[in-house]
Image (tube, rainbow over all chains, first blue to last red; front, side, top):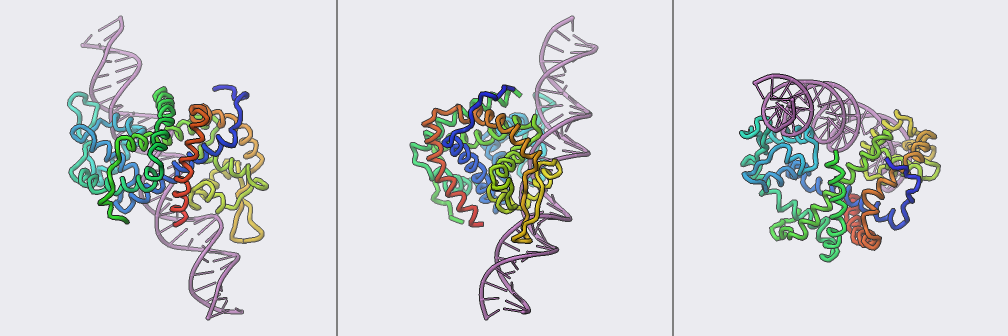
Length: 158
Length: 158
DNA sequence: CCGTGAAAGTTGAATAGTAAATTAATCATG
DNA sequence: CATGATTAATTTACTATTCAACTTTCACGG
């Protein structure tokens, strides 16, 4: 850990930018969660469905799924158990590595995904995407990308 | 709810901007949480401390604190109970409205805040603020502000 | 081959968060 | 001035998340 004795406090501008980012990310998650609720899904459920439905054979190794959804293995394991009970996914064992398991989208999971996705997209548009001028959105992406990279590095450095 | 039948899917650009925002907000929260961990605080704890320490008499009504931290009353109530057990805050009853309670920062809470804040600021700088050119940060704030306003409206519309 | 360490994944207990019901005080108005 | 609605906050029960411990399999150096 650094000494921090030489770290300047945030300027007013920085402070506001930071707070705004914070507020947007929290409020947005709440709103998306609420929009998903009528379909009986949480944000987490939805993200699992997205990842699996985009994957080869609609299946992913538990570890890969955990990595791509930025969750711990433990959390994913519980999550998949719940979704398995809900009939959205199932576990299948892996030939090539007998420690491994696949999480596989069931037909019901696939149908759910196809049914819910348009609503979710509409929600993301309404509460986020469509509120930017398109050049602003691109600027956002551009300036956020190095932050994401920085953070991903930190993360993988356990 | 709208029909969504006319909602266009996200373009590649939009998709990437959206994903990046999502990743940054999650990764960032994780990282900040990790940086606070050595001090025995969570992000939530810290935010309560910030709000109380900036408030008149280092105290806020439960409802106001809940509103400004964007939490439900129930969650805040649990949170304050925990922090009370940890000695960081205490509850005090309110003269003017006998239904009401203040959450008050204890001396220990105040000390903790003063001790931890510099580290937290350093963390926010290292993992977010300092990764932007300053005009980018201002652009971020500008483009995010209407989103925050939009979402706050939705929220208050119960 | 054999043993040792790392990797994949799960489990169970403890902690945190959500949701609905509950208590108690205040407000508003006929 | 009483009563029905609203507001403040908590409580209880339930669901989700974290954390540490554990099992099984794999990899690979001796």
